[in-house]
Image (cartoon, rainbow, N blue to C red):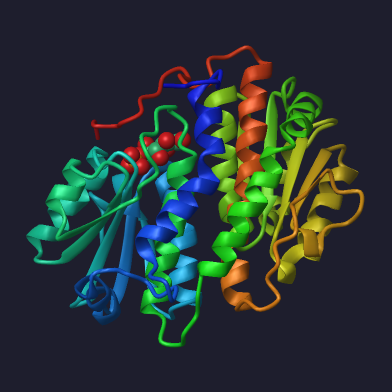
Length: 361
Ligand code: F6R
């Protein structure tokens, strides 16, 4: 039931702070240690490589997962697009472990990979939002995403839930005692502050995107991966042709597409690359781009259109804080997509040509 909401997507966007809190209750004990089956953690730690296999938005969450597994837990991780890996794989390791990420747990391409690796005798874990789904039943292990039913075709809260559970796995695998608990709790509070300010996002969508024919999201490191998800979210429900790009790569060809008034949205949450992304944005502006900046509080400039609420992180591990920073920036990009679709008079929850659960290969 949509309740007071005009569309499921808005309801699901607003549920995200509580999705994080629900997951913290389920996956962390009162000392903030991860409560995850020891066997699963042992499989992950003993693997000579972890593969994360997914499609679409879940693939984009996997890219963040890889960074967390490597940077927080120092475990080599590879991300594979299910529809590619099913038919063209190279698995040289003797003891790989496979993580399947899927909101629906029914994606046919992912299932094809699961059958292929199971036939080779490799073990797997499915993270899914639908507990009794096919991928959950067929994998060696399964863990729930607990986001509650996601009805809108565009995935929002499942992405946040996936990154959150991957963060718990990273914490549980890490040899040094890092904790994702405080940063996650602080992000949930900061998300609520953004959600109090929806009019701002509606106005920005109107100014920058509703009349656009083509748009870009750019960023570096984790922001480049959020750019992919932000672009998918915008194009799938607004039909504005959008590309997500590693900011530094734009000048190697794609810059030719920037015209007068082309919206270019810069994602800036990572301190080490903030100024570089700004200089890439300036390059697009010099070619006429209509630039919009979404920046984390500690790297924001006063003129940035969207400054994310500050998250008190002084006592937290900076690697963990940087890895999780894009969770907060996810809300603005979802809201921009939502209001662009709404502004263009489209059915936000049911974009053309798409299905919620993709059971064909
Ligand atoms: C985009 C979207 C799709 C799904 C993809 C994978 O908003 O929803 O890209 O993420 O079809 O689906 P699951 O996660 O169910 O395997």
